[in-house]
Amino acid sequence: MKQQEMNELVRRTVRDALSTSRIDIASTLSELGWRTLADTDKELAVTALFEEQGRLALSTRALDFVAAAELDVEPNTLFLWPMTNGSNINDRRRTQRVNVEGLALQRNVLAGQFILAPVNDRVCVIDISDLKENALSGMAVDAGWAFVSCSGLIASDVGPWLGLELVASLALASELVGLAERMIELATVHVTERHQFGRPIGANQAVQFRLADAYAAMAGARSLVSAAWGDGSPEAALTAKTVAGQAHCVVVDNVLQVGGAIGLSEEHPFPHLVRRGFAVDAVLGSYLDAVGMLTEEPERIRLAGPIGAF
Image 1 (tube, rainbow, N blue to C red):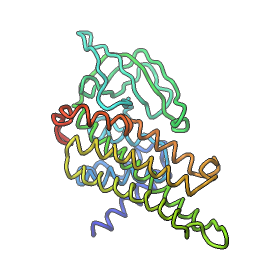
Image 2 (tube, helix red, strand yellow):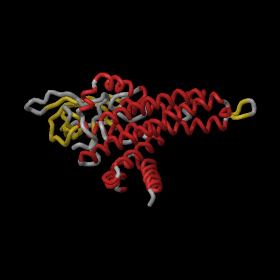
Image 3 (spheres, rainbow, N blue to C red):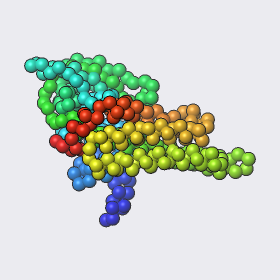
Image 4 (cartoon, rainbow, N blue to C red):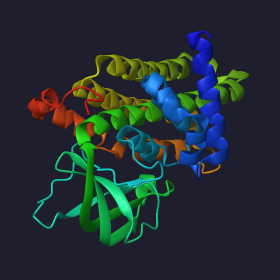
């Protein structure tokens, strides 16, 4: 089978799985043999999964599933994802009790549940004893996520955080690319179908320039994600997510300009795509946060190590 045919088969299979089984995506992807594909071609497995999730604008626990695959733990394990670049910093005393906080990709987290969370640059399994959960508002209001603060005992250490952070950054970058691509497609349909003065508004150069800028930003981000997989460095992964977050903003600005009032109508997919993109960008730190880290903390990036170094 040619590589292009293989890519399309994987994307079609993932798209169907996301469309029909988003609630229990871990079980569905496990049955499809996603881990086997990731062992053979991790870039294809991760990129296809998250670009398609972005195009569908679905909220699933696919990122948890990828984390579990990277760390070789149970597929449905819940993860707390930091909202800033880098792990939680905790004082690990002899009791091994820690306080952690982060984003859970589901609501109704329970005390007594085991979770995965980064602690002092390691990923640890934590037995939760106390927790406080807050549903998210703003751009993440319809994501079904929760911000969780909890404490508990470290049950085990399952690997370094940096390697997982890199793969997660590239997954999030691919989801942002998928969201941007879908918005451009919808905008293209809109400017083709809407007529003014007897012709499609897409015939106007101003509209064409807007969509060209949006497409260039999206395509550039996609190429950078692919290059980051090939480079394998932390700096490349962080840069790819940063550029993808910025590209999403560029696409939003241009697409809403040509879309007019539909960008404000909840009956249209645009508002949900916009909110979803800004929410995804915030996981592990937004592109604005990353720009600051890239300019202020180059030493941390240099020492982080390559992707999959665990």
